[in-house]
Amino acid sequence: MEFKLFLIKYAEIGVKGKNRFLFEDALVRQINLALKPADGTFHVYKEVGRIYVEAQDYDYEEVVEALQHVFGIVGICPLVQIEDHGFEDLKAQIVKYMDEMYPNKKITFKVNARRARKNYPLNSMEINGAVGEAVLDAFPEIQVDVHHPDVLLNIEIRQMINIYSKTIPGPGGMPVGTAGKGMLLLSGGIDSPVAGYMIAKRGVSLEAVYFHTPPYTSERAKQKVLDLAKKVAAYSGPILLNVVNFTDIQMYIYEQCPHEELTIIMKRCFYKIAERIAKDHGCLALVTGESIGQVSSQTMQSLGVINDVCEELPVFRPLIAFDKQDIVDISEKINTYEISIAPYEDCCTTFVAKHPVTKPNLNIIKKSELKLQDKMDDMINEAIEHVEQIMIHA
Ligand code: ATP
Ligand code: MG
Image (spheres, rainbow, N blue to C red):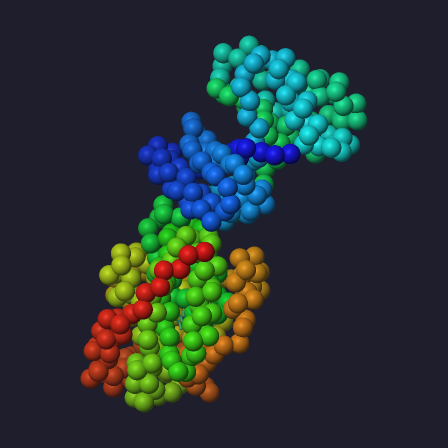
C-alpha cells in the first residue's frame, strides 16, 4: 500500500503553552533536516496539535528510517487522509483500506474513532459500532477483539478524516535545538559517541572537540573520529568538529611531569581547552563519555581532580552510571560500535603509564603542574588559535 502522508506523534508532557510552539517548530525543522538527503519531495507541516509529513516519489524504508533518527518523535503513522463525503463513503473507504492494508484477513481488530469535529453527525461510539460492522460484513474472516486486537484501526474526524492502524516507534526524547548547545569531547572510543547521542536525545545540539597528537596518533585515528561524528550527526544534526593539535602540549607534560600522573594532567588540559572553545562558541556545558570505575582516570577521585579545572561550565557525563555492556548495546544501535573498535591508537594509549595513579590528590597534581607554568598558557593559546574546524554532516 502506498502512503502519501505520515502522522508524526510526539510526547506532549512538559510542552504546554509557549514551549509547545518551540518544541513543534524544532521538530518540524529537524524532520526537514533528516529528510533532506532522502529521495522524493516532502512537505512537513503543523496543524492543530499534529505534525504531518507529506511525501511524493519517495522510498518508504528510507523515509521511515530518516524519521526514526529524529528525537522528539514517539510514533510514525503511515496515514490515509480522505475528505468527508458522508458516512457511507467513510465506511466504503475503511473497507478498502482494510483490504489493501491486510491482505491476510486472519486478524482481530478494534475500531477507535475520535471526533475532533463535534458537528459530525455520529458520535465516536456510533462510528466504532457502524464501521466495525461494515468491516465484519465485508470480510467474514476478520474478528473483533476489544482487549488485545492485532489491529487498532484509528479514525480521526477532523476537517479531513485520518485513517491509520500502524504506529512505527520513533526514538523519543526532545527535538535537537530545544535545549542549547553542548561541547562533546569526542575520542575514537566506544563511550564518547554514545554520550553525544544521549545528550542530543535531550534536545541538546552538539559541537565536538578532538585532541589529535600526530604523529603518535595517525591520520586514520583522526578519520575514525570524523566517521564517528558522522554517525552521531545522523541523530544530532550537523556537528562542528574542532580538531586541536595536542602534540606539543603532550610532549611538554611528558617531559615535565611524573609519568603516573600523565593521564590526569593531560585530561585536565583537555577540559581546560575544551571549556575555552566551548565558551567562545556559546556552548553551555562539556559532555564526556566517562563512567565511574571504567579506567584509572575514571575513579571518583580522578573525576574530581579532572573536573576541578573547569571554571564555569558544568560537565555532563550521561554514561556515568552505565555498565560497559549497556554502552556497547547503544553503540551497536547507533552504528558506532564497529567504527569504535577499529584498533587505531589514541594518545592516551601511547602515553599511558605502567601504573597510573588511581586516587590522585588535587594538591599534588597542582604542584606537578607548577612545572608547566612557564609555557603552558602560551601553548594552550597557540593550540586554540590553530584549531582545525570541520563541519560534519550525516
Ligand atoms: P571513550 O570510549 O569515549 O574513548 P574511554 O573509556 O576510552 O572513553 P578515556 O580515554 O578515559 O575513556 O576518556 C574519557 C573521556 O575523555 C572520553 O569519553 C572523551 O569524552 C574524552 N576524551 C578522551 N580522549 C579524547 C581525545 N583524544 N579527544 C577528545 N576527547 C577525549
Ligand atoms: Mg578512549
